[in-house]
Length: 443
Image (cartoon, one colour):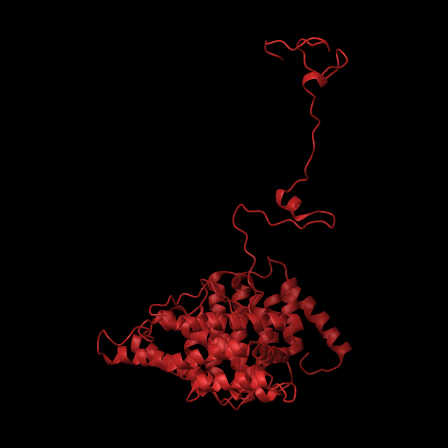
């Protein structure tokens, strides 16, 4: 299967291997993995891995037992040491299809395997190497798939902060930059014990490159920001139709990357919550320790840039949204999705910026959702999902769950007379038309 490129020959080999896999699964898998590990020709192994991913799903449960899954996990871990980008994704697909990987310990083990693979494959990060960028980006994306409340990526987070973020600025590809920063944001939401086990001094040292990257990503504040912004507004209002709009937009707005700023703000706020001494939002009135002064200086350095950013977002909101949409179109997403994601990113940045101007901000932003993630639809226990209204049905009818029904009511008083013995009538004494009703009880 590795040597042939003929589709008909490959189909015959696939049918033969499928029969052998059902008859003797362990021996067949041993031969497949040994051939992949011993193959030095550099030929692609995508079709072999696709065969494994599809064949393992068709194996009966009594055949794919725990021992066989452990054997597949051990052999796949060996193949992971030398794989291409596409082969890596297929191998993770093979592993995630195993029953032992559907549990919380299994998913945590899978995340640890991905982390070990990327640490061994990329011991030193080179921002100019395309294969190095793809390795870190795709490994992070695959690890993010398995993160949850009980599955964390602390080791991968620490590797990204120590090995990748200090050399992040020379990366030229917009998609690579955004992909790595989104992975970092996801990891900061699930830090784990590997990051928390470090000392406070070591954690502060790890977070310093992230703070420096945030400062470099924010717009540069001019000497007189109020004068610069007011002159831009006056030029915009008095320009008329003779000048183009692009000439009126300052360079700070044209070079602004709102998507990267959102990721960096998310990451630093999430990680500063785990290390309160890294950012000090109070005044330098209590204590003269070096750590306290450094924490205050970090906030003081970033506040003017954030204030200038907030002012730019107010004045050039439409231009920034359109530029952000153009950046999102590089990912080949729909126009409506790009517009919604751009608005969500701008809203998140505005909320996160306001946190830095409070004396004692609440850094718990777990209720916030990054712009590229969809808000999950949650239904409370015991609560029914809202029904879908029909074409001729109003929303009031949908809320009540039933249509209004009018019941027949028996007439009373002088209009209650009728045939004797009629069903549904009163059984008491009837009054004639000329007589007045008595004072007794009427039944």
